[in-house]
Length: 386
Ligand code: PMP
Ligand code: GLN
Image (cartoon, rainbow, N blue to C red):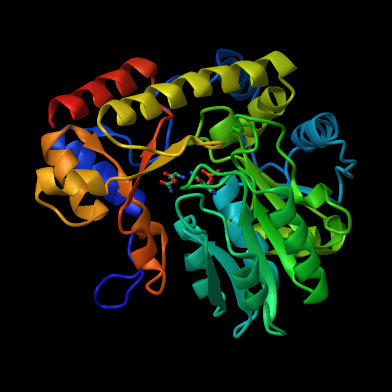
């Protein structure tokens, strides 16, 4: 998060994309799809532009999108949300998460986070003057020790941030873990901020939003995004749902951030969120193929990655490759691969604070949100370079 002079620096994703561009390597670092967004959604955006939706959208989002999100939550999770008071559209999950956290955090508050985690969380906790209390997800299963989870909560805990399915590890939270979080959040009166941008990329079994567990909804802000589900990370349309008393604060903060997400794109996303169940099934079938190409390719290259259960990321312990490459950690191996194997990944240590970094020194994250031919070629090049 910080550079050597203690200043907040740009994201690791930009850095890795620049490395891929410089070396000409395949960018399996920054997670963005290299295939087109759904044609119907893109057409809907053109139609919205042609229809003249060129002025500010309402701060909380156009009614059609909020209605579509409410129907989506009912269809997939049996959740009943009020479109006027319990849903707000944001400029990507990034703004949704930022506005959520800034709406209630005060300087000195503690926020329980699970490491490794998406870098944004640490940055926003800093913006608020609050303190992150990290709990490690222990490799190779990347599950937390329940005693560590309990020990992280204190009377100063104001929030806990969950990300399920989980970037970067590709794991999904167990029912026991979710239940423990709801119990602890209730005991310590903490807000649960849950980042579920990969809700539709869960490979085995149905995604369970933590907000649907008994007693959770009233203290939970759930964030999602069109970027992952509709392969349109550049559109910057996301949303937050939760109880009115929390959404009110998110709306207030968000009013002074983007004000409103891009109006014509909201019209198109409203249509996409309502796509038929077949769309969501196909998305998963395609992603399962991509996952298998990457995981099998890594196995061919002599690695043993755990099979991702969700997201479009895989992680692998790459220590078996150190001797051959003449390196001593995953960060160095990543650089070696970029120069010599034509593949860029991100060291998992980039998603971890100082205290727990050593636990992840051997792990590299690779994104599989790429065309299968691109993934096949990248894996073949990797094996050839050995
Ligand atoms: N949370 C997680 C876990 C992510 O991986 C990402 C982006 N890849 C985001 C949030 C940000 O989502 P958005 O692009 O919708 O802002
Ligand atoms: N979420 C993407 C990832 O984890 C990148 C997002 C970004 O570049 N900010 O790779």
